[in-house]
Amino acid sequence: MSKEEEIRIKGTATGRGVTGTEQQVEGNMADKIKTPRTKEREFGGAIGALLMLIALPGTVLYLLITCNTESASVFQVPGPLPTLQSLWNPFALILLLCWFALQAVIYMLPIGTIAEGITLRDNTRLKYKINAFYAFLVSALLAGLAIKMELHLSYVYDHFIEFAVAAAIISLSLSIFLYMKSLGAPESALAPGGNSGNLIYDFFIGHELNPRIGSFDLKYFCELRPGLIGWCLINLCFLMKDIELRGSPSLSIILVCGFQALYVMDALWHEEAILTTMDIVHDGFGFMLAFGDLCWVPFTYSLQAYFLVRHPQELSTLAALGIVLLNGVGYIIFRGSNSQKNAFRRNPSDPSVAGLETIPTATGKRLLVSGWWGLVRHPNYLGDLIMALAWSLPCGLGHILPYFYVIYFTGLLIHREARDEHQCMKKYGLAWQEYCRRVPYRIFPYIY
Image 1 (cartoon, rainbow, N blue to C red):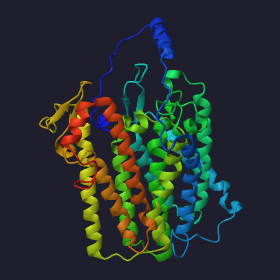
Image 2 (cartoon, rainbow, N blue to C red; image 1 turned 180 degrees about the vertical axis):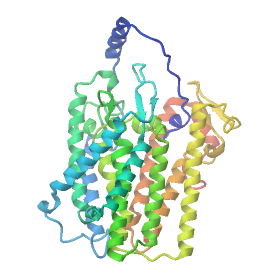
Image 3 (spheres, rainbow, N blue to C red; image 1 turned 90 degrees about the vertical axis):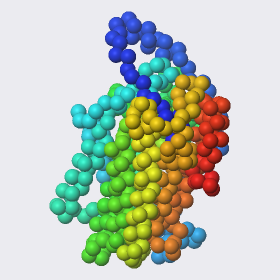
């Protein structure tokens, strides 16, 4: 998350009533606003995007197949490889579609609050329904009912690879729909990062910034609900499989599922904070986010619990306490820095942040340069990575596979941090240079 996003002060709606004529004039003006062509292409441009269209699904499949082997070694080609016919399970596809439909219904229910996003290029602000935590509670109640009815949740573990393939098919289908829809979107609605004019690149990055069907925001819906809540449900299914195999869940899998459930609930509870993230503000909704939200997150972030079902690990009480402490430290840094940023963004005069030192910028905004944000430039990333390590440690030290998440996440956050730095330098110029001088470390104190 960029510094610009971290200290953005939410504006207030004007509340001004407009006549039909005024609305028509504003609409005509919006049609004339054009999103400039994307000049700086990321991920290696069109060639890199094409490779990632193949590599991302391939990586998910490789990890899950490897996790199912006796050695669980990422350095050995897993075999025998499943046949294409064995990867196709129409029932898994139907279950996933029902899951997405359930989350969509909850999203549309008249519960929760309404928040406004940032001001767009046409000076409008989209409204978003904030009720993801309610969706989690409803999902948890339904999961509890399923357990009480003795439904075989372990079916998800037994057919997990087939579910992953079904999720990839849904992601690809959604991406094709999104790109076709974007071709009819007004110029002002296109994403600044996905308007290169190259079909492959724009398909991957996302051509339209905020694709909607009526008031239903497709990107915002997919960011937190089906995949993130689904991640917790998948972990629960693995927990039930562990109980089925051994009579009771291991301490290792309990820790992994508990840590990750806390992380998901925190994200859902602070749902409104996502409205200022790079995903919502800058990136279009294409294959990158669709696949990431609906397939990559639930099927790779749950890799530790998936690993522990077949490769159980004994964990001493002392080791468990140490891991709990490590996760607690990570969570304190993560939540403390995000809460400090959110409080400053809402009200710089709030007593909790009023005494923090800031740097003025030419845009009228100010950059936090003390508190958590004086420790490193991205303390929330630091907390995130500490928690990621704590999620992997219950899997022991004998395999690198369950550490895929923390390795991948480190690379992801370093890449995202580089994108943030580039954007903030363009936005704040000398003020950002001064901030970097005052806070030299990006994520890891005294290291990076």
